[in-house]
Image 1 (tube, rainbow, N blue to C red):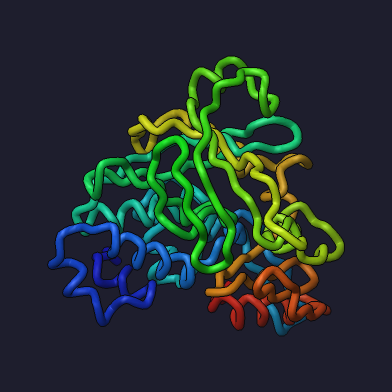
Image 2: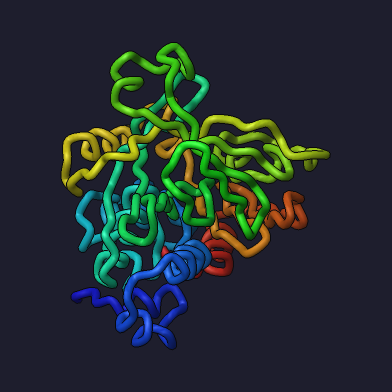
Length: 314
């Protein structure tokens, strides 16, 4: 099955506008519309790299082989459009880049080094869109916890998330000793994405990503800026470049320090927060507060939660 632009626009809820979007020249306004639509319809999930157990005779086992993430954009498009699935950074940003390019946007791909307590990890990519203004625009629907707005790729540029109120900016990566980075990383990436959270860490999907047992209460005020990932404004990488091959290999590596390989997760963005399906619970976050949490007693309940939250049938 070949994926065509109208099919992907339909997948993200824009079928009624597909003809107009295809006919129009690219614009910053439409880029924002496309980004929001993609975020709110295509889940961030790592279910394709996991095997899913059976439950008696009522729930069949699903092997991981059916949807192993890859750098093949056409496999990813079929997964997202026809199987109604999502994916993680490489899959989601590849699919979004394909959509933008099919609509005439000039898109560049950039490796990103996610900043962790153990130092930056080269397991992500960001997108830059040229030609819509004096500066490229950064977009990243595949991070799971990134700006929900296009933002100018220029130092000092600041954007406030229109959905949840977090603020993002770019700062120079001018201290080779910062973030635990290596000299090679400091030379490779000249910029760092910074974020201030409106409701604190508790309002972030990272609470569940790192496995905190409870959601912290909202912060009383905007948090100080914190580094998110290193990036290079000038990158223009191929889909199958060595850096992306190494990056996806790291995300798929079955090692204890890799959270993607250690647990199943599914995040569905909402206008005012997100829903998260974990291994044994599902929760809803709105305006930085946990408004609902339900335990999932078994595999049948887990799969029903995936269907209800993200429309996913394994």
